Amino acid sequence: MTGPAMAVWGMFPVNLHGPGHFAGIMAPTCGLTRAVVAVFRGDVAMAWRYNPLGLLVAFTSVAVLARLVAGTVTGRWPVLRVRPGRAGWIILALALVALAIRQQSQAELLMTTGLH
Image (cartoon, rainbow, N blue to C red; front, side, top):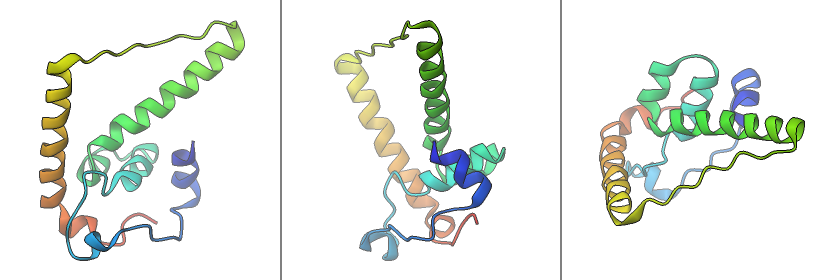
């Protein structure tokens, strides 16, 4: 749950970008950390601008925490099974390609310093 911690105390002072980032080549995950932090700061619009996947990551982290609390309190652990099948994998691959294209169109924003 580092997202809420970074929302309160700020981003890590370490740059983990690969060489492609500095050449202007954005990966589908570029801006993901900033997006998650923006979600936990309550700025959903900015999170969407950085990376739409950040909304899903933030929601999933809250759901995992809720599962942990529910399982600890009740002793029963809710389980979600996902079996996407061939069509699901194709849709996922197409969504990943679309995200990569979208992130590349956001290169100018993603190459800035971002949140503090």
